[in-house]
Image 1: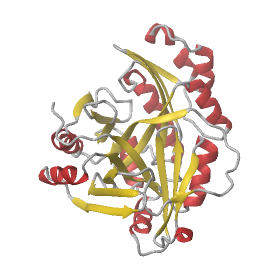
Image 2 (image 1 turned 90 degrees about the horizontal axis):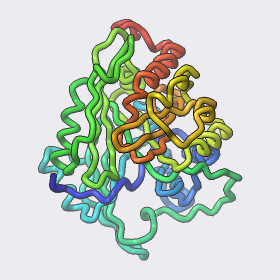
Image 3 (image 1 turned 120 degrees about the vertical axis):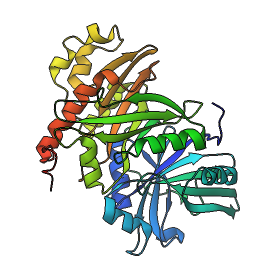
Length: 369
């Protein structure tokens, strides 16, 4: 399919958090990110404090409102800490924005241009699923954004974890909304449908969900979208929608070239992962074929493996990183595989259900308060 509205790639993800300074420290110490730039009261910006963190090609912005009467504070009260902005790099903001509006997008920020001594910065945004903004950024200079200054404070000791890019960003939407968003990405942005998982594929004894994955024509941007499916008990998507007060970003998959090294570093720094029963590894090689990683080390760390027609992948999922059971991370290493670990769905969702039960949220449908 011809690209209607070309995107260069994922630019950054912006998180709205209660305390940006403390959240930045968490991502530095546990995930190995480096603080690069800052904007806040000290730089003359009085609406919010924001920290730009980088690792490889990954850019996270952590922002806190500096008063009760701003969007960030309102979003936090409604959703808690989480991803509020998915930003894409583009070559022509105005063209992208107009094309999106023609395809039914709801305007959030009209095309805006800011000139600085370093050059020009353009951006616009539309409303995405839930309260998430889809932002489009066009840069003609080397700085991240106007108002940000290089981070100059002493950086506590940290260890690189080997994460180098965002593999995919997963959104959870309400029942009936998945196809609408999939069609929007296809029709307005020239994306293509990469994968479709129905409630017979992603199902356990108690619950089910449905998922479709869209990607841009280059394969750089992958956006799975999940919605709940009827089941005996509340699904993980139902739990997310309840505690997030609506749709939003469920998890972010971060790519590494050495998942064993990365997971060891993350665990040593205190990152908590979902647990995988050791029985999963009893017939692993028979299920997925030969892999180069030692199976005993994968079992020790709880790393899952799956194979498709193009190769194999390794993946592992963190516990939620907020007090609410909403946002979590996936660590993934691909060896040719372009899929998302379909063979691991049952093991993964049973692990998630064990955690739901521990939180008291795996109740029969209709009994959740």
